[in-house]
Structure formats: C-alpha cells, structure tokens
Length: 377
Ligand SMILES: Nc1ncnc2c1ncn2[C@@H]1O[C@H](COP(=O)(O)OP(=O)(O)O)[C@@H](O)[C@H]1O
Ligand SMILES: [Mg+2]
Image 1 (cartoon, rainbow, N blue to C red):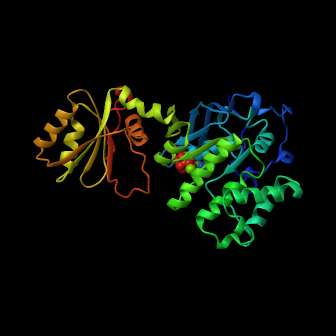
Image 2 (cartoon, rainbow, N blue to C red; image 1 turned 180 degrees about the vertical axis):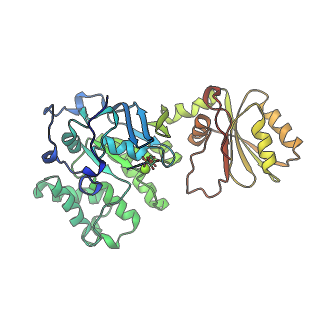
Image 3 (tube, helix red, strand yellow; image 1 turned 180 degrees about the horizontal axis):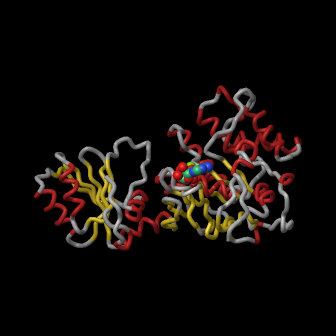
C-alpha cells in the first residue's frame, strides 16, 4: 500500500517528539480511540518502508510488538532503526506499507497515536537555562496536562529517577547521565501506553547506563508500559529485551527472544570457539577462515580470534590449520554464543560497537543456512 507523500520537515523533532497535535491533523477516519487492553499487539507493521531517493532505509519490515513487552531493535549504525521509530511515532510518513500503534493507523490517526506514546529520541531536547522542573512543566503543558495534575506527576517522576533534590537546579549544570534521566521521564509525563526509546544509553557512563536500564525495566514491570527500544549494543538488547528484531540494511533479518536467537547457532550444529594465538598473522587468520567448518570469524584483539564453526571435526581441523600455519596456540575456549555471534552468523558482518576499540577486523564466511556471504575485511 502506498501512502500519500508528506515531507519529513512537516513535523520537527523539537516540536513533536511527544506532543499530541490533534489540532494539526487534517482528518481522522476513525475517531474512536481503541482501548489498548482489548488489543493484543501494541505495534503492528506490514511491509513498512522508507525510501530516501535511491536508498531503501527501511525495506518492507513486518513485525509486531506485543502489549507489555520490551521489544528491541538491534542493528549497526545506519541499519534503519531511527527511521523505523520515526515512522511509528508519526514523525515521518511511510513510503510504502502500513503500521498501527495502539491499534491506530500511524498515518490516518497520527494525532491519536501521539497521545498514546512517549518518545525518547536520540537527540536530547532540553533547555539549559531552565530548571529540571521548569523543563518538565514546559513539556507537560504542551500535552495540555492541567497544572494540578502535572506538578505532582513531575515530582513523582523526579523521585523515580532520584533527582528530586535537583528539581530546581538549571539543567545546564547537570551531567549527561542526569540530563538523560530527565529526558526519559519527560517522555512519561503523559503516562504513555507505549514508550519508544531510541538508543537510550548512547554516550552515557557505565553507572548512568545501568540506572537508565534499571529504570526502563521498572517502567515496564510496574506500569505495564510496552517498550520499544533501539540499540546497537548487543549486551543492552540481551539484558533488557523480551524479544529482539535484528535489523540490517533496512531489513529485519531475525526476530525472536534473545535465548532463541542464540540457539540458532547451536541448532544449526554450530559452536563458538575463541583461540588465543600469540603470533597471529593475517595469513593465519585467512587460513582459519578458509577451513570448511568455519561459519563466521572475527578478530577480537591482536591475538584473539573468535570462530563460529560446525561439525564434529571442527576443533581438530582448526587446530591442524593453525599449527600448519606455524601458529602458537596459547589457549582455546568454548564460549556461549552471544547476539554478536548471531548477527555475524546471519549477515556475515559484525555489529561494530564503537565502544570497542579492540576490534580490528571481522568477516563472515557462510551465512545462516549456508547462504554465501560477502567477506568484509
Ligand atoms: N532524512 C534522510 N534523508 C536521507 N537519508 C536518510 C535520512 N534519514 C536517514 N537516512 C539514511 O537512512 C539510513 C538509516 O538511517 P537510520 O534510521 O538513522 O539508522 P540507525 O538509526 O539504524 O543508525 C542511513 O543510511 C541514513 O543515512
Ligand atoms: Mg539511530
């Protein structure tokens, strides 16, 4: 289904990240706001695409997010996560396909969708000169929340993120972690049924990161809020999400629980081994890569090579190959598969987490179910 064109600049992040805009919605085909309790899925998409010129930034994705779950969109930078979120939050019009949020069509019922959702976008929008309380009150007023309800709500949320003592301090004096906590509660002012978080811990220090993750979990369990978050961090997706959609180059390449995604490796008779080779060379790396049992390979440091391999002879074959290349093996470990391994297994590429400076090179050999993959070195 194609939808009428609308430019992305029509609605800016600044003015609308969470703000109901019923007044600018030209028409609403169905004015009945569905009760989310009677709807099984918080989000449904069908062939949803966003095309920028030649680029299919989001390429016909169909998935659903169940009511009350934490759903993660995991993929490398540029995969199409933010673009998908923007369409679901009515900030960008789909080029093709359809999506409903809380049972409401994101194009035809965009104003009502905005009333049901909260968005923590990648870009933090705060006014440094205003206090935390004033910032929150400003955004709350945009929702038309009456002052009598808004002020207690702000206090309650500030307490939830342990910032009540900072309520009347200027945001400009806050650390990035504190600002992000305010940014997250800002999205909760209207008590949304569905909360979107786009890379919620990006750029945060470890302590703030774990606080935000804990907070996300609490919002989900205590309020039953459905949460959809994007991340390029495997660990974050693994820790937080009930189900994960792995997105690569605009397409969902796998969708399941973290446990089942990791089982994809063992169910395809695969295992993950890590070799510590003290004199590792690129020729040796390539020789390992060429071994038939090798499904995917990545280099973790100057001496560590992580290999996903298959078959009973895999271990012997790999040891033989390394020795034939005069490799000195310091240790071999059999490791539990991670989501990083799953991504590599499926796409033949590594999700580059920019926090990891050690990763020097990566490559996949054969993809899921034996599909050949391009090599990236
Ligand atoms: N407004 C735009 N115009 C043109 N290309 C865009 C625009 N927004 C995003 N893109 C491109 O779409 C792709 C997906 O981007 P994005 O959704 O931001 O990825 P992610 O959030 O997964 O890092 C990227 O190649 C990006 O450069
Ligand atoms: Mg993004």
